Image 1 (cartoon, rainbow, N blue to C red):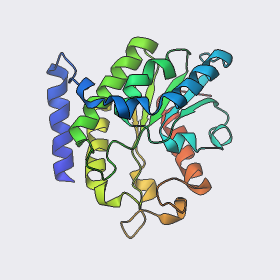
Image 2: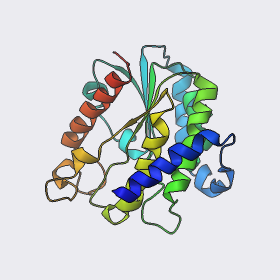
Image 3: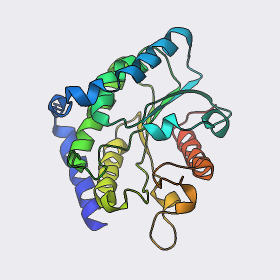
Image 4: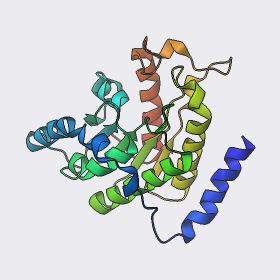
Amino acid sequence: MFRLSLVALLVLLAAPFSCDYPDVESYIQAEEVLRWEPAIHRFDSLNAIEDSDETTLLVTGSSSVRLWDGVATDLAPYKVMQRGYGGAKLSDYNYYAKRIIKAHRFKGIVVFIANDIHGGDDDRSPEEVLALFRKLSKQIREQNGRTPVLWVGITPTPYRWEVWPNTREANELIKAYCKWRRPLHFIPTEDLFIGPDGLPDSSLFRADMLHLNADGYRVWAERIKEGLAGAGIEP
């Protein structure tokens, strides 16, 4: 806990004096990016027929967003536009952000992307995840001005429990970065999904122990709505 807090403090102290954003283009591998072109093309088609305005909330990110069949009900009375694709990472999302987000106006943008640290050889470090988040938040600010952006903390899951220390550190870095940078907001979720035994609560997950079930989504939705209210975003 102390180490995480110290790292977060160092980010807060150092970041304001950095006038440039880290070079993250080198993280974006063509094969990794282009595999999602069909999903993004589908978003292009939806963007051509769906409209939004300052009453619309964009919920976007990886498979947990894509699989959220009850998002409109769970987040009611907010008016929701859903844009999620399975396996999304911050690296490829940065590449496609303009096509996913720019075509619309929004009341707020809720982002959940959880695959940059997954237990593979290509895992990003917590610091790289922060750099990619900074890149994304900069893109959104350039495209959507002062539209509030709410980053949903990466969920502790049974399936990826071994990499939770790195994931948790990435969460802490992003939380620290958001703290003094409105309109960025961090929505914590760790306390919702870790049980009294200190382990992820499997009752909130599907059989794959990675994605949320209906109960997990309802818990998630209530915390997201609390975060929206805290950011001053009313339905």
